[in-house]
Amino acid sequence: MTVHLNFRTIAFFLGVLIFSSSNLIASDALANAGFQKWIRDFEKTARKSGISKSTYRLAFKGVTSPDPRVLEKARFQPEFIQKTWHYLDTRVNERTIGNGKEMKRKWSRLLSRIEKSYGIDRHIILAIWSMETSYGAALEKPGRLHNVIRALATIAYADKRRRKFGRTQLIHAMRILQNGHVSREGLIGSWAGAMGHTQFIPSSYNTYAVDADGNGRKDIWNSIPDALATAANLLKRNGWRTGRTWGYEVKLPKSVTSKQNGKTRTLGQWQKLGVRRINGKPFPRPKEKAVLKLMSGRNGPAFLMLRNFYVLKRYNNADKYALGVGHLADRIAGYGPIQKKWPRKFQPLSDKEKKELQRLLSRLGLYDGEIDGDIGSGSRAAIKQMQKKFGMRPDGYDSKEFLRKLRRYRA
Image (cartoon, rainbow, N blue to C red; front, side, top):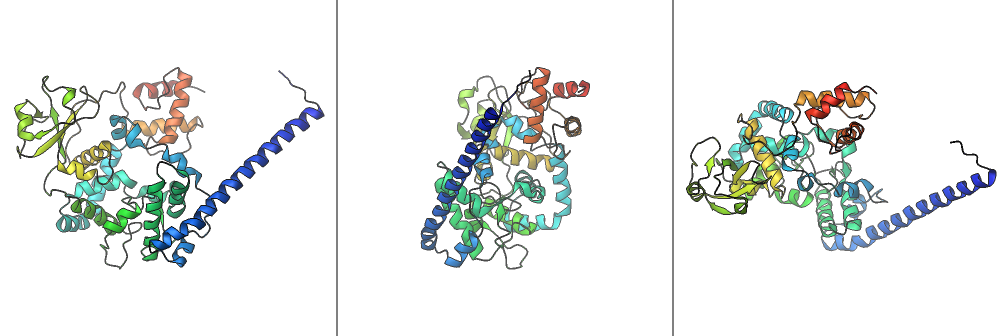
C-alpha cells in the first residue's frame, strides 16, 4: 500500500519527532544533572571514610553520567536464572577443560608455590580463573569492561536494590586508588565492580589481595601470580580444608526423597540410609558432615556437599557457581563427567558443533561475534530468531535438533 503525505502531514510528523527528541535530550540532561549532584554530595561520605580530596577528584574525573550498560546487566545474573545444566554446559566443556590443562602446564611452578603457601589444590584455582575470566581472555575484550568508579556510582545512585552495596564498594575502590596499587585508568572491572583475572569486588580485594610477584603492588589486573594467589588466600582464610574434596555425586535409594534436599547428616548416616557414591567407592571420612543437594530435582544428579563447597560459595554465593568450580576442577584433574544425566529435553552440542552453529548463523547475518564455541547472549539471540522461523520454541538452546534444521536451511 502506498501512502501519500501532504506538506502539513510531513510538518506534523517532523514536529512530533523534534518534540520527542528534545524531550529525550532534556530527560537525559536532567538525569545527568541529578547524577552529578549525587557525586558532589557523596564526597562528604567519602571524606569521612578516609578518602582524600585529591583521590576523590581523580576517581570521578570525567564521570558525568551513569553507565547505562550497568543497569541492563544487573537484570541478568546467570547463577540465579539459568537452569543448572545450562549453566554448566557453558562453563564446563571441552574448551574450558582443555584450556585448563594447558594453563596447568604453563603455570605449573606458580601453582606449586600456591599449593605450598595456601594449601589450595591447583585445579580449584584454575577452575576459578576459568569461571571468572576464561583464564584472562575476558580482560582482552574492552567492550565487556567498565570503569569501576562509574559502574559502582551508577549502582549507588540508580539501583535501589543494590544501593548500599554500590556505596560501600565505591569507598573501597577509591581506597585502592589511594593506596597506589593501580592507576585510575587501570581500575576496570565488571558491571558490579568485580576486578582482575579472578574478579574481586573492591572490599574483597582490600581484605585478601596478595603481592605474589614481589613488585610492591597487588596487581590482580596484570599479574597472574597476584591474581591466583589472591584467590587462594580468600579460600584459605575462609576455612578451606586442604587435601579434601568439595563433594560427591551420589546414587539415592528410593527411600530418600526430594524432601531430604538440603538436609545435613554425616556421610556415615547418609550411607546407613542407602546413599552411595556414584562410583561405588566408600566415603573416606564417615564422620564428616554433608548436605544433600538435588539441583535439578529428584530426576537429576544428586550430590553430598562438604565444607569446601561452602567455602567456594564465599567467592560467589550461588550453588551453581560452587558446583561449576568443583566439577571443572575435577575435569581438569582428569576425572570423568557427572554420571547421571541432567533432565534436559534435548541433546547438547559438542564444542566442534557449537562452532559450526556459530558459523552458520554468521553466514545468515544473524551473528557477528567470535567463532569460539562459547554460546553467549549474541549466539542465543540468533538461535531464538531462527527457532521462531523453524516453528520451534524460542528458548535459545543449542540443541542437535536445531543444528540439523540450520544445516538444511536455505535463506
